[in-house]
Amino acid sequence: MQTRNPFLDELAKTMEGAASIAQAATEEARAAVRAQADRWVADLDLVRRDEFEALRDRLTAEIDALKAEIAKLTLAGDIVRPSDDAG
Image 1: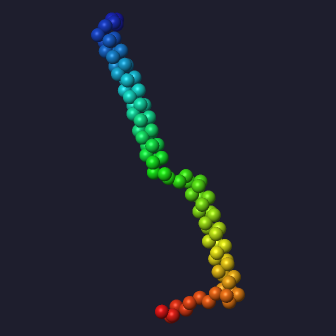
Image 2 (image 1 turned 90 degrees about the horizontal axis):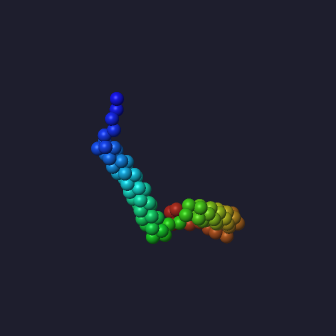
Image 3 (image 1 turned 180 degrees about the horizontal axis):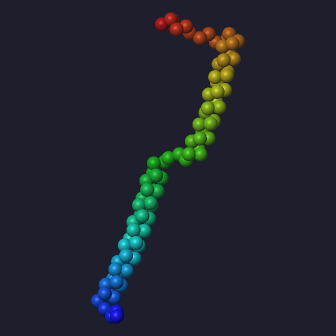
């Protein structure tokens, strides 16, 4: 036979309240940390990955075009490469 104990009922309610407060505090702390990290990253003025990759691809294409132009001019005899022993 079980009897209801008012002390245990109050203790259970208090523990439930403490757990919900702890969870709310955890979520608030997590949001604050995330907001601070977002501000920190914004202050760093970082470039987005897609912008970086687009610039890298464009520069790679320019470098390849310049290498092809140098090769063409070298074959045509317009550019004479310095010899290694010209030092």
